[in-house]
Amino acid sequence: MNRRNIFLTILFLSLCVLSFGANTKNKSWVSRLEPINWWTGMQHAELQLMLFGPNISDATVAVDYEGVLLKRKVLTDNPDYAFLYFDITENAKPGTMNIVLSRGKKKQTIAYELKARREGSALRAGFTEADAVYLLMPDRFVNGNPANDSIKGYHQGVNRADLSKRHGGDIEGVISKIPYLADLGITALWTTPFFDNNDTQYSYHHYGVSDYYKIDPRMGSNEDFVRMTKICHDNGIKYILDVVPNHCGGSHWWMQSKPSADWFNEWPQFTSSNYRMTAWTDPHRSEADLTRLTKGWFAPNMPDFNLNNPLVFDYLRQAYVFWIERSYVAGLRVDTYPYNDIKLAAKFIQSIRDEYPNMNVVGECWVKTPAETAYYQSGNNNKDGFDSCLPSVMDFLLKDVLHEAINQSEGWESGMARYYAHYAQDFVYANTNLLMNFLDNHDIDRFSTAVKGDVRKYKMGLAMLMTTRGYPQIYYGTEIMLEGIAGTYEGHRFDFPGGWKEDTRNAFTRAGRTEAENEVFDYLKKLLHYRKNNTVLQSGRMKQFIPQDGIYVYFRYNNEKTVMVMTNNNEVEKELEMKRFAEMLGGITKATEITSGKVIDLNNVKIPAKTVWVMEL
Ligand code: CA
Image 1 (tube, rainbow, N blue to C red):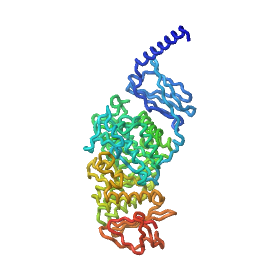
Image 2: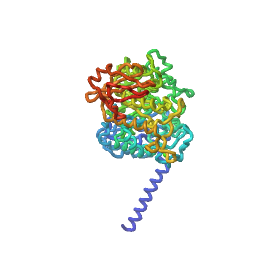
Image 3: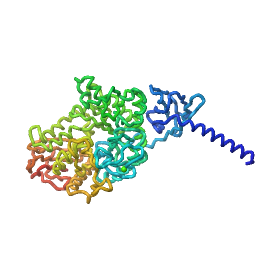
Image 4: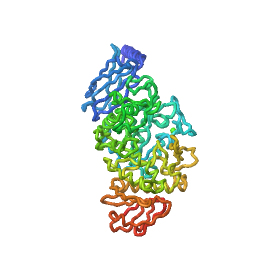
């Protein structure tokens, strides 16, 4: 290179830098662009891109990328937003597409990544009735990374002395216990959300999202979340994502500048929901009650989405598809389903299932009659034609009935008679195998509280949960009979002992558990493994006999096996004759109780007080 060329080169480079400098002096016109990336080859070819920046609505948009068409630009009453709708056709290949924004002669280019989908992503397996689900609140489970307990720019740090504050549990903590869960016999994991939740209070539960494209740094990174789901997948545990279509959080960045006046259901002043989900199924309901149920806010810091606005609908749909596609999510749990306009909620869930046809979804439809619960299960023959698109629903009433039955004395309609009657209502369901059963969860008193720490009653509940129709959900700490405080919201959200390095004991280990805790742990583990390895408890038919004298007997059976479950709800040992069960027993006279391994002589049955025997015939 001669001197003149060097001079020209330097001059050229200087000009480049100048021109680049001139560009960067005008900072990016767009401060938010969501989704942060997308994929080619999605079933739903349309992509909505939300652009946020000062007066971004006035920018002209162009894209030049093979197979990608800019279909339309949708503007709202807020000039700082523009919603671009693209068609990512089947001709589009993975790569970086340039979206060019212009204002007169000024231009800015946004590089946007279209990734390749993971092989088999669309047809990934969902959870089934064969699974046993473990529910945990990450903040209260294990603190795997104390370094992220407090993060600059985030309101709440850690205060373990206060149940309403953050305690420091995180993704790393969950990851560290995946082998423990697999060993216990768990095959599916539902965690409460990990999304960014920068509220000034109650942020620990993460149901008030402040950024849909960011895992809260106090929980870990976006990559940590993906890694956690991958490790679950590799350990035979299906990860269930908690989907919240009803609301975001009061600290969401939208609240500084709402995307549109009708983005949320607005009221002149804070108006709560009436929380009366009966309004959806009540043929005599008033419109006022229904409006209050669905458009009232769940809490002051939970702005209520207007899913009727297609921009909101598409935004949220993509936010959840984004995390499913990016990670190894194998199922969805839908929060507060009936607080939404249920027709839109159904459409919302179906739009996700269109993308992942094998994805299973369980809905939180917190209603208290079998008729209402059945209404929310997909495939139910509802008179009004409504189909929830939820293959699975939670059996909230079962929990009540079981708690009551174990504590009640026997009567015509109490105790086991009441429990039996619950199943006699099963004719209302489209699919009893996909009812999610539980003794407790993060919103209700712990079962340990309901039985006041009585290990006998507690084991009865576990055995009945694990052997009835449907599939079980176990709340973290249930395996050690973790205590709670009845009737208080946070009293069932204690930390798992041993999840923090400063804890005085580690209940994740045998040595760290008390004798009673080990008894409960071993009992549940045996039941979980038996259920995991025997389809009879997953999908076998159920036959029950009317309880007599506090003894309730039911069978699960299929072509391979018959399991007889005998429940003595009395405070005394009971002797019973087997003649009444002849249609199931045939000539069988011996059975093995699966939790103890004992062989039971069916000609001479004396079942101890407050005991359940799970017997393989
Ligand atoms: Ca932490």
